[in-house]
Image 1 (tube, rainbow, N blue to C red):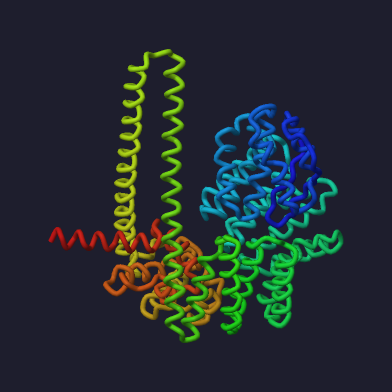
Image 2: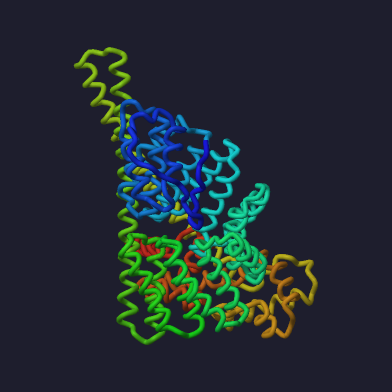
Length: 559
């Protein structure tokens, strides 16, 4: 059974004819043979074929329906028609047993993963479904789709500036080179590694992989990935100080993304990277224009995967340009957007609970029929079961809510205790047998951080800190590793988050936008601040503030 890779940066290749009696397709192989005749990038033709097969009850087996449904769901996801995609996926995931352990099963979980990320912006669930799909492809020994799945994971992580995809990128790169004569996957995986390296502390390492991808794309005319190659080249030249060349390549990336990719998320990703570059080079009006185009695409296509970041960037640029009203407008838009996402997720969770309840009720009724219980007794048992199920769901919700509150309380208390234990310089030195020179250097670094608040500098680096201390980066790095138990960045982040917590717990911090708190303690990006805050405290900054305020209020009430 031949399946096509489902890749965000790779094309969907399939083919088509018309005039068939769809009810004659009795197996998945019959359906695949039909779908392999669909013209490239012809979503309407694909849906015209898959829809009647998916809805055919008689004369079509479940595997054929699953096959048609999976390809149909994929087309709806790519067209941003998420309501239609959800109808397909709800049925497919509940009836997937016949295709477990096959490439078709892997494809189903891959499409479901893309849906979760695009429609619900549920990244953990999306990545989990991707990995489940990878497992299905692995069982089927389908190396091509294993690579495709890994590239998809890297693509989504890269769009969120998350370097955690490095492991997947290297694995995909290695697997692709085990497939003879597959230059297409070699090109795609070289791009994946370059994406992750461009986010690393040594972005210049991405250069060989960018060159490899560019060479393969040019040799085999893979024009659909041209926008990503130009984007990575632009970022590389920006990092190496060649700003004129970087600007030209960013412009090329924008043009190619709109012309070749036909995928709103691709265009938005280029716009946000270009905008960030313009911010760094002081071209705030140009950055505002690019972010505005990104928001416009979100409204037109329904693809809101990067809307949150566009809004925050627009708010930040407006503030830097001195327009506080516009800045507050976009910041309120950002808050409203997050609120709407929370409501949407709650609605989805409620619907899933009710769907499970309906499934359990249906199964119970079927069992009662099989046992031929009298009508009166059956009604009593059904009603009792419904009451029990509802009671269990209600109690579970109360227990989960209580546990969550207790967890929040515990996390806040633990972090406060941690702050008390690590506030003094003396308590921070745990290795009494250390070299005197290293201990002295560490003491100087601690005094500098505590008394001068050096960690607030946004451009703080190991080199600049070493210069202030009158030493070199090797010595200060060794001292930090020895006495802090972590590297330079984790050391600085601990100070920044402690400062952020103190601000959040103050009376002024209760009303202060998190963006401004992040900026005050040394972060350029709210996204990075949010990620580091969760790592340090176990809670997002917003939840930490809510819990701190609740504890403070309870303390007053108790007093």
